[in-house]
Amino acid sequence: MFSISLTTIFYFFSFLLILFSGNWRARFQKISNNFAAFSFWILFTLFVIGTFYSVSPTDRITLDLRDQNWLLITPFLIMIIKEDRWRQRMINAFLAIMIITLAISFLKTIFHLHPISAMHFYKPRPQHKGFLWDHITQSYAMNIAAFICAYRFIFENKSKLLYGILFLLMTVDIIFISEGRTGYGIFFLLLLYLSWVRFRWRGLSAAITLTILMIGIAFFASSVFQARIKSTYINTVYYHQMREHNQSTSVGKRIQMLQVTKILFQKRPWFGYGTGGIETPIKTIVPYKDRALLLSNTNSVESIYLNYALQFGVVGLMIFLLMLTIQIRTSFQLPKDYRYLMHIVLIATLFGGLFCSFFNNFPVKHVFALFSALCFSALQSNSFQQHNIGKKII
Image (tube, rainbow, N blue to C red; front, side, top):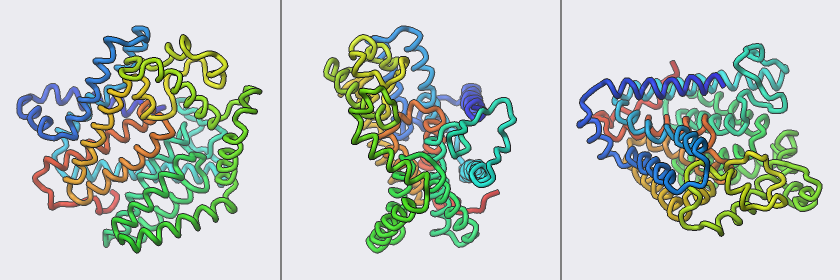
């Protein structure tokens, strides 16, 4: 994807600028005092240690290490983002991109147009209603954008109508257009969270009622929503029959991945199979009948947590959970606006990561890294009283 190339260039260009900027002692001191920043390096160290006992071939190990560059670079981004105006520009740039994505998604769904389909660097999937190559990625990013708009609508006095309309349009995209079932769950969780933050128990009760009402309306009004819910039920109940006929579905693959995880985890529960993924142990340990629905080059399962358990065992999973705990605790020390924004990103990522391998998904892990850099950099800011998240776009 073109956006992936741009993100990669941005990451490494920022890193090179840091390398030539000097004053390393002071910069490292800022990172070491910011526990959230340091947690990324702790996790990267886990992958380095995993290379010494990995069962994967060298090329797989190298590829896995390369894919974890975001863990290495994110603390440096936290270090260099110092001013609130740059944080605000990053948020607004993200919103602008998602508004464009929203517009293209509606054009494709309503008028069956795809304005960029002729561009040689982008090949859309015709079976997906969204604009991005991966509907899971789009629903994840759209949820974050929707609740930034909702936050501004609730807490800020400027441009309320604009943000209210944007939130409603993004809600329609997430619930009625997107095929990402994980996105439905993320949306309703964020709705409950924001209602609690603003209105406490009264808001939470209203949000629960609204959630039930929205699910009912979506089920009968949206053919996409209804089809995805029905397919989840059917593919779960009739999994064994479909498996016997090698009928592969996303739900069936996830169920089989759980079975594969159980087999692999029992063999090496404490330290896992090391850096490089699980393609090699799947082929050598798991009988074909227990992995028939998976692709031959499957290198991960659809869960952040299960992937860490398989690659690094119980020890690695505990280190990963420790990193998350550090980030969650640190988020409560942030200025109010950045605290809520980081909570939105964490909820979306940690819930979605139950059912999707988000940290093996390039766009998702880089969105997470960029928002982590944006929010946690506010911890070292001298302008905590300047909360600019509510300013206008542009």
